[in-house]
Length: 93
Image 1 (cartoon, rainbow, N blue to C red):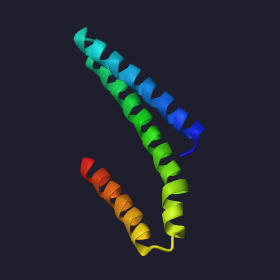
Image 2 (image 1 turned 90 degrees about the horizontal axis):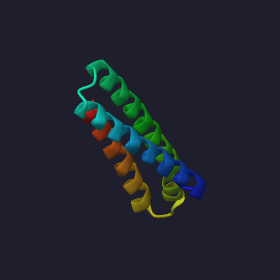
Image 3 (image 1 turned 135 degrees about the vertical axis):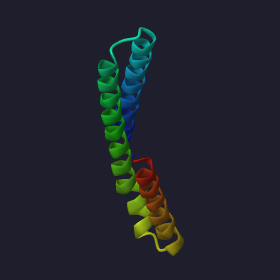
Image 4 (image 1 turned 180 degrees about the vertical axis):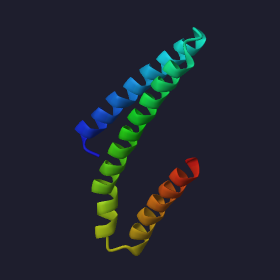
């Protein structure tokens, strides 16, 4: 991942952390449930965007490098990693 992409992911993650603290404050203040749920949905969308940027960077760098490698083990490793992430994502839903 390039430096500017990494910085963007860090910035976005810090923003999500701030929003999560806001949800905690809302819960402590016993705010209206639907308002809390909407904030949680916004956090989920932001996390999805972060995850997508991370995956994109990984595909453009690590995976591309491994696929171009002369070592079959490198290619097998990245394919296994991607399948593991895919399987984990499917289990969460």
